[in-house]
Length: 540
Image (cartoon, rainbow, N blue to C red; front, side, top):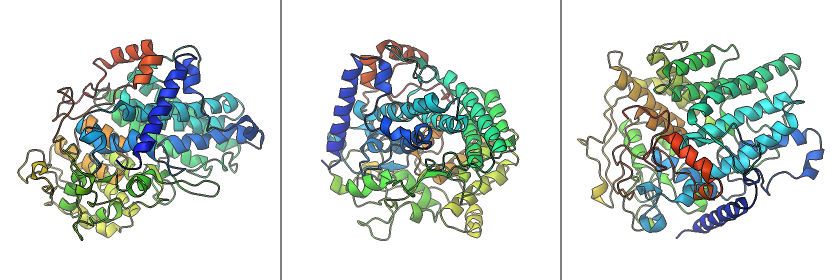
């Protein structure tokens, strides 16, 4: 057992305490009380009463290790979406070797994002709404964008969620269908952009949230660009379930004269340490402080080494067990001892590495896919695909000429995988589980091959954002990542189709049971890891 197990225990105790409190109080209080939040006495100064809650929202979009405790991020994202997306794995035999990575789903882990986003992000959004929606709409507009960013991540993990009725009080909080939530995302973004645009026109030099904006320093024009980029991401998620709406909203995002994020130097959506705020990267804590609980995945090894991709050195460190080489861990294997693989490739992440939400490279790949589908994305699929790779290379410090050389490679393919500890985990070069996609764009390829090429390069570029990567894998089937070797779901989750969602927390059944039952009916299937979300319709 590693030292972070005690954090898991603390998290489970807190979850139990919340569920106990919720059983005898209004559900509203369960979702909207947090002893770590700003106190009334803190809210009497300057604009703090309106905007300080933006800090809380930003820090909790991805549960942040501000205090050096990354336990929530570890159980909520790293041992869920980061692994399910194929980006990262763990050498640690949590739960005696039976855990999320091999589909023995730990409810205490999967409840992490549900609790964090509702108790922290949405709670803070409600405070901004109550204090600023009328007399400071520009502050509320930023909160709206943050809410959409947060809740898209959550609904894409679970499905139907409390959204439109959040904060209305009562003994239960109603769940909305995922279809309803997604359509409301677009209207929320619309209203946010309108408010920000009006404020900028009236007060072009004003910086109303400068003390509380950890992303753009109160540059509201960049918040509009990010909102358009987020609209594009949300629209693309609907490409199979609601293609007309997806095209309409994607084209709206690209056509907006305010633009979308394009500049690596100034427009990446991320939070990082700055004056007055210290941001500790949670992956650094999980990797270093927790003594190696996360490592490079076998999938990342296969793609990055097979492609001779120089970004491997900015993402990971060579193995100390096999000096000079990179070695990843296959997900969902039988792990006996942490020592067997803890010296495989660790993460090239520092304590203050920024926590990234979205990059210009991702926007390019989204536009490339839209163009591939025949949408008006302001360019063709080939050019936008190549721009995405070039933007990603630039973000990691590589030149445009290096990107051009990479893009000209029409022969390299993902490499076979060898586990030096257990050959049962190997992936042979002839395996049907190994992707055969190349890098160079080929206009004569069919739609699916082009789509796989775009999504594979997007997957590499957005590392380590496992939530978005897992959602896109479920939507498209790409990149082609290895299935688990050991499946402890007792036949619930299909090994080849892989896990599709997270089950609702047990505490929700205890305190909001009728609404959870409604949510499950909206899912159209049982509350388990095999049931697909509303937008997950490809090859159903």
